[in-house]
Image (cartoon, rainbow, N blue to C red; front, side, top):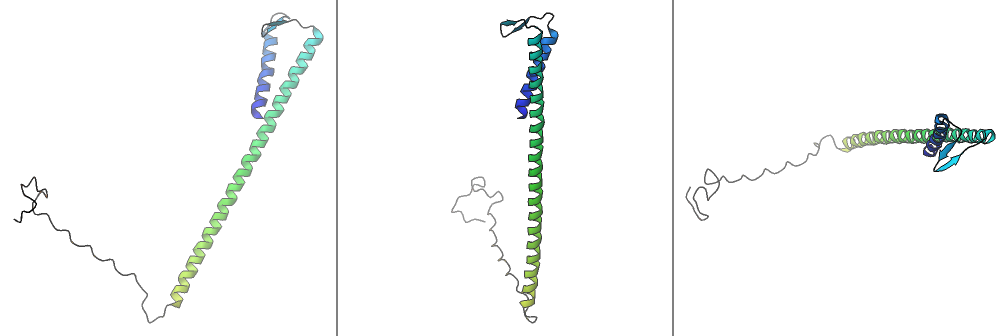
Length: 146
């Protein structure tokens, strides 16, 4: 609607500019020559004013509708954000409650179960030669020298 309103305002502005810049009462538009009398000129001016007002009305109503839509989207996002924050708070509360229940159900004499330590990785054998590359060290694959 905003685009159509803008087009109508520009058309009305173009008509006013064309009438204001002509020196005579003879107008050439799209290859046609018009020479209106006083009544026709009045009716053309009234039509131009109506087109201008319609364009301004379309601009205004389109802007209001866009603003209303943006406001509605903004409020929906805010509501969604608050709902998400509420759910996250509930989740944290439930996690704390679960941790307290787990701590309460474990007997006081037994130590808390701890995860088993990870096995140590096996040591990597060091290369026989300083460079680690048998071709550079002039060794062979079956070479047993230190």
